[in-house]
Length: 293
Image (tube, rainbow, N blue to C red):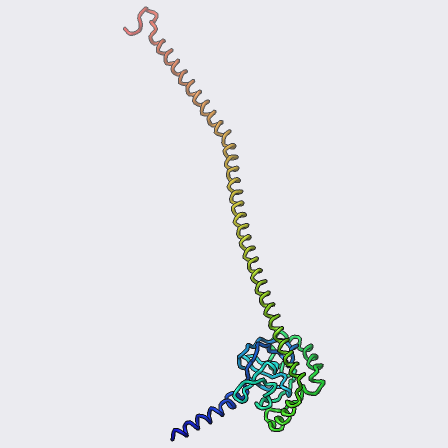
């Protein structure tokens, strides 16, 4: 194969790559919210960040909202926030959507919510949101349910979308700009709310830690007070026992002294008797002799 053919093939591949590699894909030009329906008033699922890619499952006929997949979520993002790859660069889907072949969808509340949001908290208010969807302006002007199946004829839709694109007015672009500004304001407000929540949480944790430390200090003080009370009670009991034992000791000492006195008296009495007997033995008898002859 000649070098010219190789170069020509590479150029052809590079020319065809953007049209095929980015089919069904889009990018976010700003941080924006993912909603549970094609309107800012629907519940917010998450924040999608600028520069991230999303998978386009389809858009409303006017490309004002698109059904996307983002990090495992399924929801709706305003078309003004999405960029499609067209003519070797990224451009707003609101302008180039008809040329990218995205499917035109209708938003059917019942099947969509039942399939994707049964596990969400806001699903408990399904009846209210169903009424909101039924009364939405898109339903009243007929655009809400207008769409085509995925296997429909794309050529007719593209021609109709070309006419729709030609009929877009400056007021539409201003509306999309206002939507972006409103989305940005909501993000700023939510960011400020998030900062406030984090500050409140930090303050609550600090207060809880302070209360826990105070509780531990109070517990230690209470234990010390109880130990001091027990020690004083034991000292009082010991003094009482000593006071109770003192009369008993005095009685014992008194009895010992009495016993010693009796013993001493008995000893003295025995000594006197012995002396008397000795004196009687040494006294002369009636014959004038002393009894030793």
